[in-house]
Length: 392
Ligand code: PMP
Ligand code: GLN
Image (cartoon, rainbow, N blue to C red; front, side):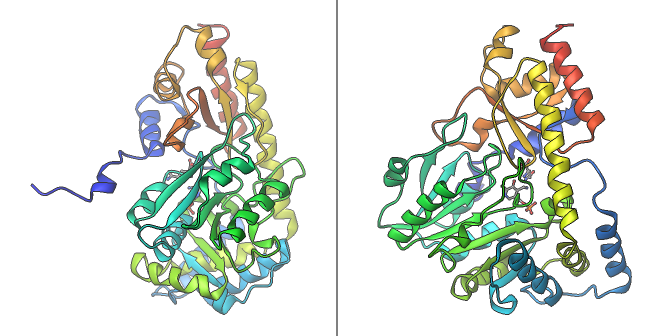
C-alpha cells in the first residue's frame, strides 16, 4: 500500500487531543487543552444567533465580511494606534490555525529558513516543513523563558525568510517586553526578513502589563503579519474565527493560500465577532482581570500542593516544575510520563511542556490551564493536594 504524506505521517495525534481523551477516559478534571468552561459573552452569542437566523448564510467574500474587516481595522487603531486599511490589509480566516498555515504556505519557498522560538505551538513546525522551510530554533530558557542576542545570531542567516513569534507565549505564559521585541525587530530588519506574529492571546495579559504588537515597532509595520483569534478574545474557542492584519504586499500571497485552504469562514460568526470587537473597554479589562484572578487561584493552589510555579503574565496557562512533587512521591519519569501518570492517579489532566520542543526540551515542566470555573480549579487542587501532600 502506498503511504500518506511523509511529513505529516511522522507526527502522532496532537498532545491536546491525546490528553483530552485520556482525561475523559479517567473521569479527570481537564486542565490540559486550553479552553474556557463557561458559556462566553451572552451578547456576542446573541449576535451570532441573530445572524444565523436572520442573516446571510451563503459564502461571504473570501477576505471576510466588510463588517468584520472594518471592526478589525478599528480594533487595531483603538488598542495599538495602528492605521489599517480594512480593504487591503485585513483578512478573516477559519481560526488562527488557518491564518498561521496560510501565512507559512503563502510566504515560504522551499529552502527558506524560518526562525522558531521553542517552546512553540504544535502546528508551526509541521506546516513550515510542508512548505519546504528549513527550521532554525531559538530555545527559550526557563524559568523566565529568556533568550540572548547570541541566540538570535546563531539562528538568523542571510537565508532567513521569516521569524514566527508567539506573544503572549503558549505554553510559557511569557509576555515579551519591549527590549526583547526590539532585539527581534533588529534581526528581522538586518536580514531583510518578515515576522509572522501569533498574537492570539493579545487581550489575555495580566499584572498591568500591555501587549505590544511587534508590528508597532519602528520599521516593522510592513514586515509583520499580525494574527488574532476571536476564540481567545471572546472565550469561544470552538468558533474558529481568526484574522490576519498585514501590509498589502504581504497579505496578497497569504490570501492565495487561504483561497485554497478554506476560502471563507461562517458569516454568522463573523457578524458576531465584528460586534464583539466593538465592545467597550470594560469588556476587555474584565476579561483580563477575571483570568488573572484564576491564574492566581490556580498558582496558589499548585504551590500549596508542592508544585514550583513559574512566573507568567498572560495566556490561559501556568507552567509548573514537577521535580519536587515527583521526587516526593518517588516518581522518576519525565514530564510526558508524569502527565500520563497524573491523569490516572490524581484525575487531573495537564500538558507536558516538552511537547512544544523538538530539541533542548526541559523534562520537568508541565502546563496547567486556569480558564476554568473557580470550583473546578478548587476541585483539581484538592485532588493534587490529596495525592502530593496528604498522600491519601
Ligand atoms: N496559536 C496559539 C499559540 C494557540 O494557543 C492557539 C490555540 N488554539 C492557536 C494559535 C489557534 O487558535 P484558533 O483556535 O483560533 O485556531
Ligand atoms: N491552543 C490550545 C492549547 O494550547 C489547543 C488547541 C488544540 O487543541 N489544537 O491548549
